Picture 1 (cartoon, helix red, strand yellow):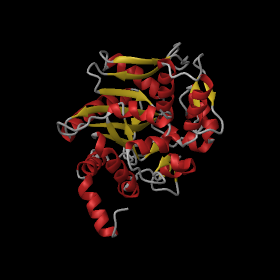
Picture 2 (spheres, rainbow, N blue to C red; picture 1 turned 60 degrees about the horizontal axis):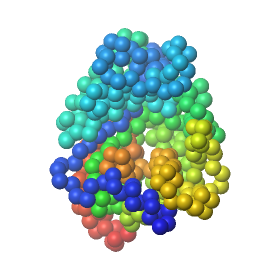
Picture 3 (cartoon, one colour; picture 1 turned 45 degrees about the horizontal axis):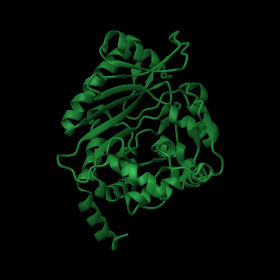
Picture 4 (spheres, helix red, strand yellow; picture 1 turned 180 degrees about the horizontal axis):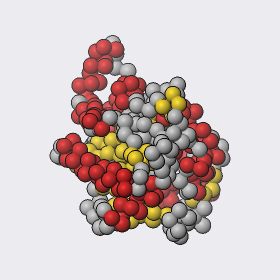
Amino acid sequence: RGVVDRIIGRFEKGFVEKLTQKRLIGREAEYPVVWPDGNAADVRLLLKELHKKDLQDFTPMFEELPCRLLGSEKQLAGLRSPDKKLEIVLEVGWGTVEVITGPFGDLNELKTAHEDAMRFVVHAAARLGMKVLGSGLQPRTRPNLELMTPRPRYLTMRDLLGEEVWEAWCVTASDQIHVDVCKEEIPRVNNLVNLLHPLVVALCGNSAVLGGEISPFMCARQGLMRDLGYRHGMPLTPISSLRDHIAKIMDFPFLWIRNDDGQLEVIEDRTFEQWASEQETKHGSNSTTRLDNEYDCFLLHDHYVWHSARPRNKQGTVECRAACQQPWSEHMSAAALHLGMVENSEGIWSLIQEEGGGEN
């Protein structure tokens, strides 16, 4: 079998054939944390405070990286609740905390869980003299290398993708929503949410101030990452099937792999499909070990394509990525908007086709 067939055979197993219950929904919400002067505060201190005084029963998630700030041989990168429905984690920039909630059966459950989590985060930050920014606001600290969480792969990504583009991830304040889909819905839902990317940015773009100055963009994240081309934001073309999606993702340049020593090895001037075909020719074996490695490498490759909507087989969802954080009184609006898009995707497509005068 070809590379696409091998990958799709495993990737599609993450999605059910048919939804038998109402859609589950989850949320990945990013919040910059600052000192009173508006400059970035270190979320690793916040995580330590949360674990010590508020969330002692949460499982700490460590990375094998020395952390001079905490005087530790390991870096505290997050906390996970006993039921695994809440994670509070360190983002690409050490000045941003990400609160991951769900999955839950409806928006009210998700709202309650998120607000409970944010209550802990905000109170712990206050004890340390920090403030949590809402409404998609950015710290006064500009995106820069020093603000980047010290993870070796991030330096590699910075070299591959460019300083300005990658460092922009250090100050993101996005509101990413996961919504359950079944296998047959993926093309329709994925295409619709990507098509409505400009609408979501217009309604939910909330990060025009960057580094203490007015930027040219309604959504600074989208503007700063425009140099990623069709690897980020709205894809160039729609997909006709999940297989077509996999084939298109494979046609992007493959960035890097982890070698046998666990070190990053940059792949130059090859798409993922070209690299996988070379490996098949070189090793000539379809052993379980080689195929497992090929699939793991694809998942790594897929992780670094950031379309505004993308199927996530680990969760069985479509992830909707275009919104910034909203004012706290409306903090569930982006989640509600995207859930509505997914739930009524057939009706919205019909309306678009009627108004647009065609099916494409």
